Image 1 (cartoon, rainbow, N blue to C red):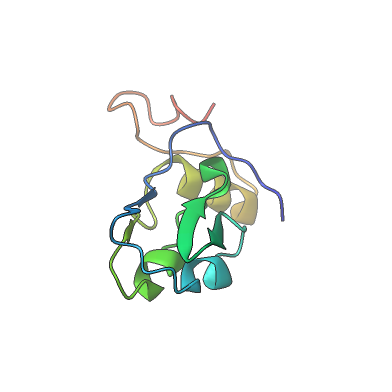
Image 2: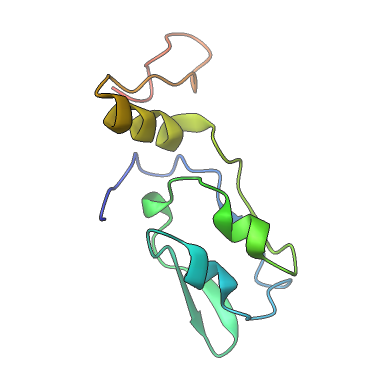
Length: 100
């Protein structure tokens, strides 16, 4: 899969200071968002994140945070799965302002 979402909208963040370099994030991420070099994880392409939350749930150091199931990435995925237009409420106004 090489689905790209809207630029800079994902809630994914990584605290390099907390990372212990176990590599579980890279192992469980379905879109290859993480790499681990020299026992430090790095986000290689944040815009590939689908906000599933697998990385954060598997991080033993709590170095990763992501709001799973919210925002534009989730709206795109649900749109693809259901064959409908993406609908999120990022703007607080129109329900599809950030996904159109």
